[in-house]
Length: 150
Image (cartoon, rainbow, N blue to C red; front, top):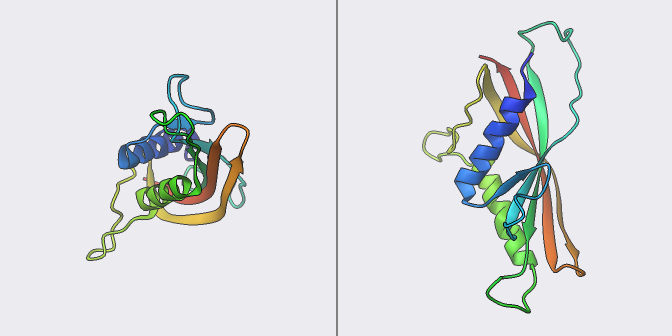
């Protein structure tokens, strides 16, 4: 069975390095970080097929990425806007799903100890929502990662 924590850590590192934006795993990044940032959530896993004791079984995990836009700290009356949230969603899609047009290979390698990524896809894209009370705009996407033991 493939452990989930190394997958979560690898996805978090890939998203942060590919976008140059902070990533919080399941919660807001440290208190001194202001938007824009990403939130990465591991969605509940559904298992079927061979028993959990079968160490050679493939698995897929779904992760939610919430892009959180916000006011520009240099502009006191600014607000998070849809354009910024969509720009961030584009960056997340490119980070996880971008391919080299010449070779078809992933632009960003996803290295997970004991596992090989055999497929990546956009599972659901719920889109943007806003919260006028705190000037935040967010954009939700879910990505699926299929893995096989290495």
